[in-house]
Length: 281
Image 1 (spheres, rainbow, N blue to C red):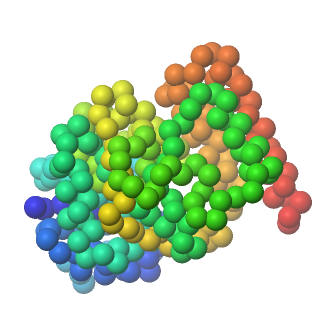
Image 2 (cartoon, one colour):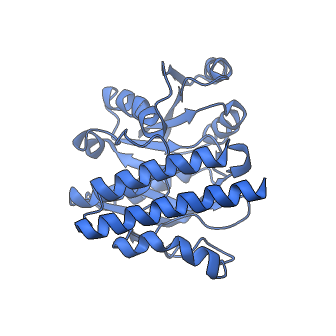
Image 3 (cartoon, rainbow, N blue to C red):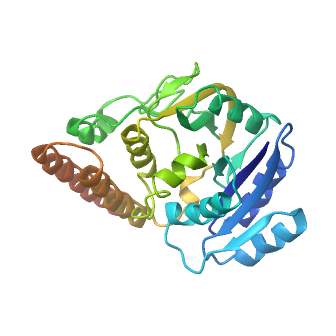
């Protein structure tokens, strides 16, 4: 089976090279590696990598964010008639050479599955998948627990059961497989968020379509994400605020009062984060 793999680059050419090297070792499937450059300073390096490794290179004329950039690759995959596409961040590693094959197997066990993902660990060994469902408006205040509660040592506090394969409510956007018929059905990823909250939005879209997500514990990928290298944390947190407010008001189905309370929590969280960041500086 041929699978499209979409890797979105923004100034991560070294990570792209490493990710491509892992994907080139995949067995039992035929992959077309589609590298989309999101109008980044090192796009020429990624283009050269694609010529060298026989990958498909697509340059975006502007950087409109994560979902918009991935949609460029997804539209290409749709035009080519692919049944499945794997979205992978450049900083993903795939030590298991049958990773993609087994993710396809997970997708094909039930026709209602339109999104699938695997166990994912960070460089610190902490599990990042699957993610618990966004609950009612009260969950917008869960950030307060971060100041009061002791953190788990094996997984983030928003992580569901990572030890067993199961239908799940939400998976990490750093690496997931999607069914292209479903992507066409929803009109591709919602492009309002520039960064952040792509996962809860996709979770709600799956729910509204009467489809399902699946998490398989049988395979594992490594996410070499280093937060300190990703730019100004205040600007990134402001992007999170913008995206989270959009999710609450567009997708959450909270009552009007619930929306207002959630919005207040998000704004307070942002102000507190900025204040703490200034103190640290």
